[in-house]
Image 1 (cartoon, rainbow over the protein chains, first blue to last red):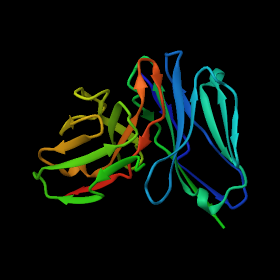
Image 2 (spheres, chains in turn blue, yellow):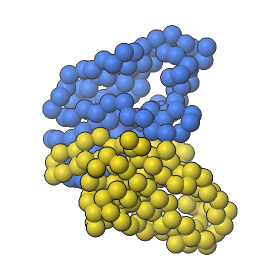
Image 3 (cartoon, chains in turn purple, green):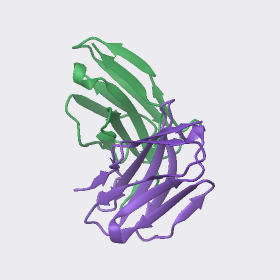
Image 4 (tube, one colour):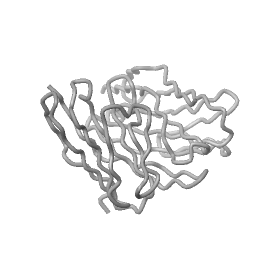
Length: 116
Length: 115
């Protein structure tokens, strides 16, 4: 069975601080996909990144960066120089290739609160 | 493109009433999903459909039924609503075939309150 753990329930930072969200996953599959989604206060789910298990390159997109480490089964997400608009719940999710219809296993989410 | 659309946005039901949540996508995806979101629990899969005419249970299917009407539309029915079904419901779609999976895109959600 697959499992995603986001141990941080809530993180509060002051604007311009960096914030790192942890995601630890469990799977016995060798081929799998990891995702991050953002849920702002308006409630919709916004896709941020998809990474497959064969691609361990870290990725940077503007102020967002992701650190994928298979050795520790982690896929952490860093927001650099946080802004108030980054306030949201962030979800990490996992799907595995043997479960071939793309079902996602979500973590419980981390609430990020950025204050001015 | 509208992406994934859901109706209604908000609904209040009394215990025992029935209703159908509608979902449609215009991205030509083969797979569609229904999730529910409860505080502190992330999203949990209720049902999914790999293709038109097929459906299968997810993690929390009890109390729900689904219909994959065609490639675009996937509906979720509550036959006899219970207060435990108070939640936010999200529909999603993606292209998934064999071991290959693309990103799931989500609708705006339906907030359901059962009294």
